Length: 380
Image (cartoon, rainbow, N blue to C red; front, side, top):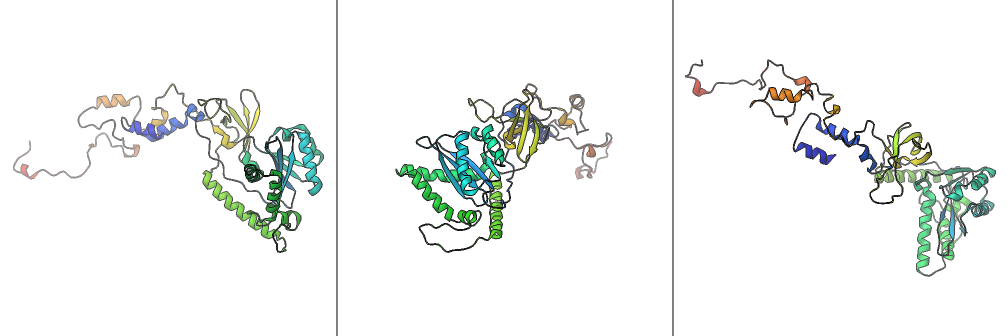
């Protein structure tokens, strides 16, 4: 857009040139397909659950050197961690690990997972129904929605990588890490995960001072830290609210490209069926299938887009609001009024409210005095 304006200003001019270029660029369908994704929407912070082990988030970490995986569960209230080693990540083995956790802490009310096959299977869904658990799936290709467990996976992975590099037993190092983690004050809640989860701070090799849990102070501190994190993240990501609404036609971002020349967005058109915050459900106009995406992965199709084969910029948008000149009569008027005292085509045309009458001179109305050397002459 900036290059086109600079190029046109160097050779031509017409009224509302800048707005005409902007309309032309924003209406280009092909430019939309290769454009960068939209900025993410501002973050939404959720309130702390009413108690421990009511709302948990789970995810797999792996594979490890011998093909194992770790099923990581995070309590959203206390940030308490549970890690279960698993050899196969199918639904049956996942359910066994979940029952092992339930036997220690009880059955949660809500479980948040990604869209992995073991979590999206009918078997795991029936398991949650049997235990009266609300199963929440994150938006596909949007792991930030399950950020708590994803962040814990990153911390656990660092410890495992250090153990592997030093030739230590990663299982022993993992348990020592969890012991220290559960006894350390969390940066968001301000309390140790074991204190919020079990009602006491667990004992480690270091001496400790007994205390009590102030739940109100925990909630205030948690809300304050979340708000600080939200403001920092929104500013860093340049977050802004999306203008996509229900009924809009959109393109979907390609998550995996087969070669470099593929556009960022697929040319297939979709219609927005439902939008809840940044969670959008779209339907294909070709196959009728519905997909769930974050609005960052969508690009709104320009309304009344301009065909790339007709690249003329002198459209109705250019002269629509300018009653002084008519695009069809402009050349004839300039040809008939051509002369040394006429303005060039590249000079700006006055607005309609300042148009002079035909009987008024084109010059300014300042007073004109006769030169003193002509005082002795009588004009004819």
